[in-house]
Image (cartoon, rainbow, N blue to C red; front, side, top):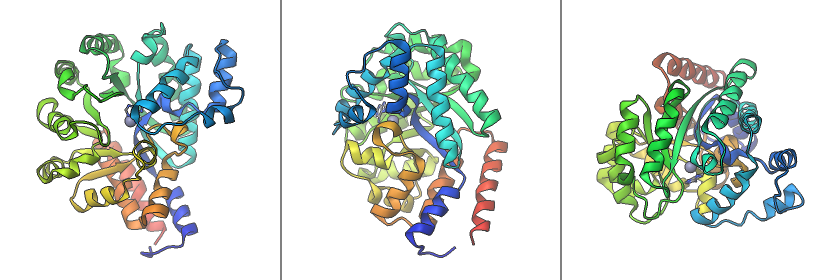
Length: 344
Ligand code: ADE
Ligand code: ZN
């Protein structure tokens, strides 16, 4: 493989690589066209006449302004079929980009708080996962996120509601509004989740108040397996060294960062790699930030000069830190190696 490739050949290289996605919110994959179809089916008013008008109203500039639009838009999700359709659409789209394995977040409290049963949500998502594995050849696992602005008691109730579906959920995460909602607020919930056999991750969104305190709590108090975003760990060399030593994956989302903090964080991702930290690339909320996996990798090439070797390192990291059995991990790393050998 040449170290410098033309833009066209690097795009083709990115497109054909077998890839994994570890940080995508299913509710953040709700494309405007599907929102309109679900709104019509369920008799819900969207407040806009066309998908283009809806997109034009996506004027977020930080995490809270994004979350307001995100929660409003998901009010069209009411039935099991709605959750199926959303999940199927994402898995079809991401498979078309050669993403072969995904770990997908879902936010049950954003639905149960609107009167939609936990069972409705997970049954629809799970049915799409099973069908997509069989018909599209894309493997996926679910990560249940708690909304951090809600009380810890609500997270615990949600955790308990999930237990009958333990075999369908690989891990738990923490998302939504980080301000004044530190990891430690959920220590008991995450300890119970660990005891139930779930893997643990938490969002440490970019440039949040007390971010280093939050990252420290993730490492020391919650003892997470991964951190979502975690870009600000670069501000503390000891934290970086510890993340590298413990092999903790960081699920970074460049295009999302460009929207939410006006920075693709390409330099930061490079520094993480140089420090031996397992940075991975992900789409976060692709329907809102208008970029799936390949668009994220292409943005790193076009706007931050990432070449094939760095792209490959990031893709390999995803398979290395994925919550897969060792047999499945070897399978995917083998596919990646085969694809690289075919590109020499
Ligand atoms: N929920 C959906 N997308 C999110 C993000 N980028 N950060 C925190 N919570 C989220
Ligand atoms: Zn996220």
